[in-house]
Amino acid sequence: MVDLQWLGVVRHGQSTGNVLAEQAEASGLEEIAIPERDADVPLSELGREQAQAVGRWLAGLSVHERPQVAVVSPYLRTRQTAELALAGMDVPAVLDERLRDRELGVLDLLTARGVEARLPVEAARRRRLGKFYYRPPGGESWADVLLRLRSLLGDVRTAHPGGRVVLFGHEAIVMLVRYLVEGLDEATLMRLARDSTLGNCSISSWRSDGERLRPERFNAVEHLDRDGTPETRRENADG
Image (cartoon, rainbow, N blue to C red; front, top):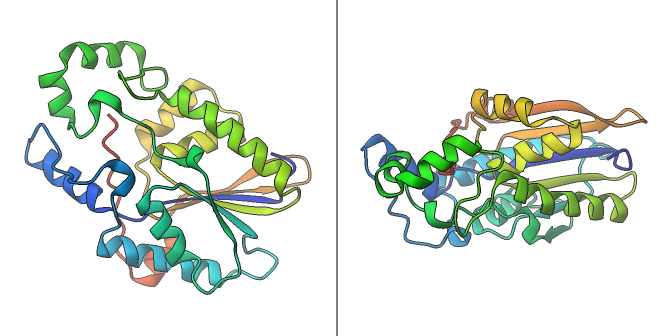
């Protein structure tokens, strides 16, 4: 990562799926009634406001601090977040499927209660293996997502040496970029996952000290507070 001057990751704004998942969990339901496929879930109205607040934060950076390029997950909620955040700025955006959300396979659309009730064997296997290595049938483990992120970040370093790059992605993406950039181990990453609920449109970033990228901010939402935009911290339904 030393080849980059600055790297940032923005989690997408609140989505309609986040809202429906929270309602399903709060109601004790087994299934989340999201009508779209995961790739087509849009931002909620609040999510759009959050993305615009990110845009005002970016616009307030000096020309020497502002990102030079954005790499965006192709999922609708992340594309909408990037479009709103980068509106009016001369920051080219590139879609890359390697930034997509973690694929949940047979767990897709199930609440925590639903997994335990409908797939007890998988629930037990997930507890035994842990979040890092557990791969649901038809889905991905966090270790699987890391493989595509390593490839993506390698290409970003090659394409933008000494550059400033912002990624627009998902909850797991933010956590796993931190794992890679800071050289964390599984135990440290799992502690972070337990202790941190990532805010929608939160910003995490790292800046080069000439030798390596050093942490600058993690899960920051102060730009939302300053803008008067409500925070939301709904986890994705990935167990």
